[in-house]
Amino acid sequence: MRIDIDAVTVEISGARVVEDVSLRAGSGQFVGLVGPNGSGKSTLLRCVYRALRPTAGAVRLGGDDLLAMTARDSARRLAALPQEAVAEFDFTVAEVVAMGRLPHQRAVARETDEDRRTCATALEAVGAGHLADRGFLTLSGGEKQRVLIARALAQQPQVLVLDEPTNHLDIAQQLEVLSLVRTSGPTVLAALHDLNLAALHCDLLHVIDGGRIVASGAPHDVLTPALLADVFGVRAHRVPHPETGVIQLLFDRLAPR
Image 1 (cartoon, one colour):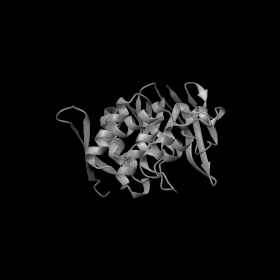
Image 2 (cartoon, rainbow, N blue to C red; image 1 turned 90 degrees about the vertical axis):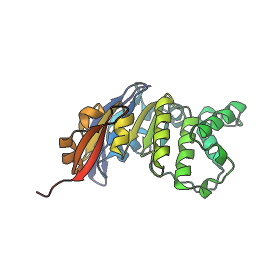
Image 3 (spheres, rainbow, N blue to C red; image 1 turned 180 degrees about the vertical axis):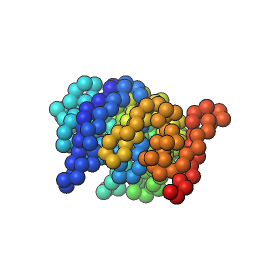
């Protein structure tokens, strides 16, 4: 499913945090948002998963206005993993993942065998099947992140929105989870902190700075030394990955002016 962000502006307490941002993620694409801290990435994504209403502009799923949909209807199409997910009650891991099935169930319906299979498959996919009976609050940060990704996959969305999905994951888990997300089917819109992971997994990148998109395109076209110096304040050296040929980055501090 295609997702369109059309001229979205967000003002918070009189400050313009996101300004006139437009972008598209085509069906099945993995589209990344990168930018320094405070650039507006998370604020923009909150508009996409309905945690925040934009001051102006619109978000469309498959051409339909997101805010015109019911919450249940949008949840059948779109799943999100926010940067900070809070669990106030100590549900088991299986119960947390089962929450991903709620948009597909009737109000009084019980969990079906298909729901249970879907949740078990999602947990196994992220390498967390053995955690099913554990209390969510007893898990490490990395384990919690994998469980929350499993919940999003169990929702079987057509669009998946991820805000720093590799937080708390070790290197192997970062690579595994992003590869899984990329091959799982939905259109993906993700804010990523690690530029090398973004270069490896994204079809398109949008660089946000000061609430505006300052560059868009394929990773090898966007992640240039000039842009990285200007936006991130670092000196970057581009090297091809010895196996994939994908551009990877080595960083130095910029020399003082």
